[in-house]
Length: 276
Image 1: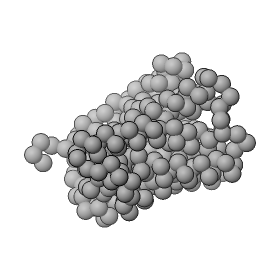
Image 2: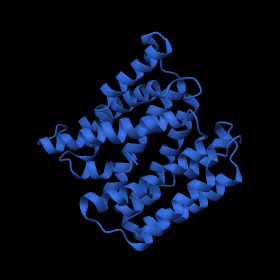
Image 3: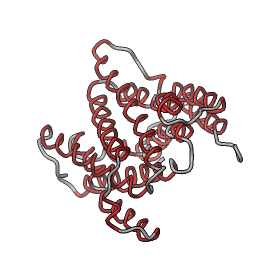
Image 4: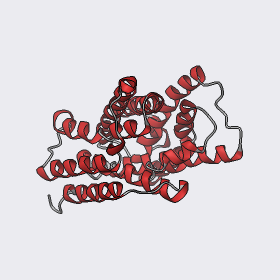
């Protein structure tokens, strides 16, 4: 839900797409560093341990940078509906990669839940999806976005087998920030916001959507299978629709309501069973 309201914050900023992507991650670093230090102190680990980057964390940081870059390219090159709908295909990649890449079996309940969530996403945002020749490159960027985010899930799940959520989120965010800063400096006319309102929106993007959303995701991936956790990301679309209704006055249609209900049903069906 925290990640799902990020479009509201992005819409209220006055910087370019890559600059806002950088501030989303770069602005969260102080809070994430404090979290990582707190976890290390509580566990008795040396504070220097939070700077040790393993392969899974390095890959996670690079993948999340790719996710944000291609997401913003998709927004620029195709409709918001197309970009959002195609980006929600990330759970498909997670389900495929769980057994093939990280050794986690995917049960029938998860497959049934995935089918319901995909149907729900079609009702929620897919009804506005259109195939247009001039948007094909943007649609491709949307598919690539989903691939990067799905692989990011798998990388964080592997990293959580050895490291704490705070350390993973901080270090992977640090890697993502370096990449996005380089891209923003090379492509954006300016990076700093011009108004207090824009700065506040960027702070919300960093503290709520990234530190909150990605941080809680990393925590969850230490306790739940990657495939099920990925299905919960469909709630991003539900949260975006609700936030648009509450804060921007955008009406929620009957099709969107049905889609949200199907997504909730899919997550319920796919939930891990006690003792399972």
